Amino acid sequence: MLAIIGGSRLAQLPILQVTHRQIVRTPFGDPSCALTFGRIGSQNVVFMARHGYGNSIAPHEINYRANIWALHSVGAKKVLAIGSVGGIRPDMAPGMLVVPDNIIDYTWGRKHTFYEGPDRPLVRVDFTHPYDAELRQVVLAAAQAGQVPCIDGGVYAVTQGPRLETAAEILRLQRDGADMVGMTGMPEAALAREMGLQYLHVCHIANWAAGKGSSREHILFADDALADGMAKVQALLAALSGD
Ligand code: HPA
Image (cartoon, rainbow, N blue to C red; front, side):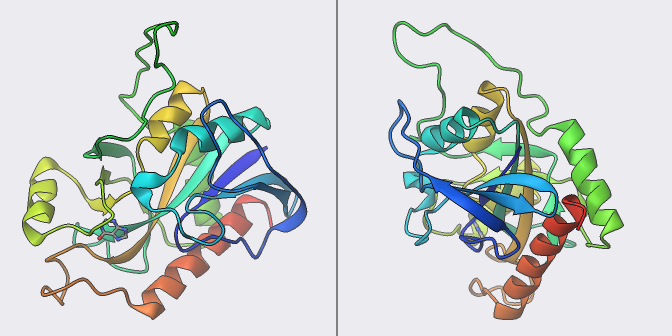
């Protein structure tokens, strides 16, 4: 079963044929929402809205551990995580989709591991390549088959939020090697790795990052770019499910 975690622009999944919903409790507290089960084409899917169905949970307040635990507990093996980001690299323009291939984590103070407490073993999971290679090939092939334009690769900088970055912070992220910036990529990816889930991010670019693009004075979220990005996400998910 494929799990899809929807981001702030994807609290519902119109192409999902819903069969049922389930409230899951976890040792780490409540997930962002009840899980929605259904099918996209022939693919069994469990869907979760990362920010809650009312889109009310801020990035730093999401219970990432409960979310990943819940998806694992219902038998998900693969997780496709959708998230909106700001574009830093010149080709990462609003409306584009990107499948990043690495992460730099700037978040702090988030519950970021399942290995916590005196009776837990010390486990150092390998995180050299944070995204699953097999899932990546499947998603990129689906994008190609469905003619959904999608940039292959790029470094995702994860900031703490909820405020957006300063122009100077974006320049620093760029010097560090980041191509896009978002707030929810971590610790979600690392927790998925700890749980042994195959995890991949698909980012849609909602805006130019601070100080980038043609409007350098402030960040613009253009409705047409957002709609374009969401249409591409839906098309990609349909292509992935053989529809
Ligand atoms: N910065 C951080 N997170 C974001 C942005 C951004 O510019 N756009 C969408 N999520």
